[in-house]
Amino acid sequence: MSDLSAFRQPVVQAARPELRAVAGISQNKLRIKELSFYYDRTRALKDLTFDIPERRITAIIGPSGCGKSTLLRVFNRMYDLVPRARAQGSVLFEGEDIVTTRRLLELRQRIGMVFQRPSPFPMSIRDNVAFAPRLLGWGSARVKEAVARSLQAAALWDEVKDRLGDSATSLSGGQLQRLSIARCLAVNPEVILMDEPCSALDPIATLKIEDLMVELARDYTIVIVTHNMQQAARVSDNTAFMLMNQAERCGELIEFAPTHELFNQPRDRRTEDYITGRFG
Image 1: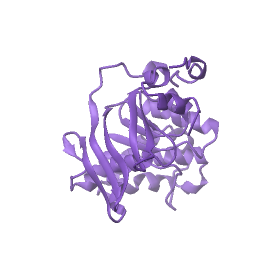
Image 2: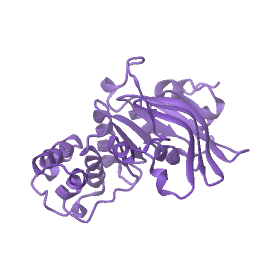
Image 3: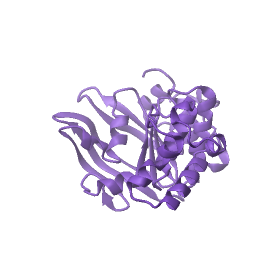
Image 4: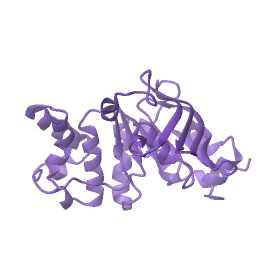
């Protein structure tokens, strides 16, 4: 394989290198085994098998249409909202299979989701963060503590603590994305799924979200879908590369490895072609 050092040298360093994972010390949080996914009769994912380590950042990369976001939605069963969508295989989370569990409210509390574009509720900053805790029946003192804790963890508290009663729509795009993260954190999840969380943000706001992700990985398992190769290289500890199987028209896993290995010594030529911009 060709030497890719010229491409990788500017991007493989972590945003916060001191927080990067040490190989072999993290347990697996999610274990995906022979996972396939269907929209009615159309197969979208084919036989995916890999593990997602606990309290680490795992990036999922690949061209549009290869099933990255579909995979993310399997992890908290959001596909249940799509008629005739179904998964086969298993995704083990703390020993329980996500594919077959019926405890969906608990699952979605423990595995939260942050979307590409923030969608604030038409209410105050405080009420946005308090919405889910109140829905769960938490008392007012616990809700108040959750609002402050979550905004602090999302690096937003100092910017909004004096205007919690203001409408959430008064926030900037980057602030809204951090509000979405705070809203996710409010119910004490264990896993945070992020679907291209920086694609609509400017470089300064993107950097804040990236630094925040690395900080959050101290306490949470993070899975991020991104089209930004530099972002995946900067923030993630492990990377999964997916590609469309042209013969079967479904997404498949080409390679999963520690990020520095996948970017510096990819095992598959298709991985090298993608990260160097030869296709995709």
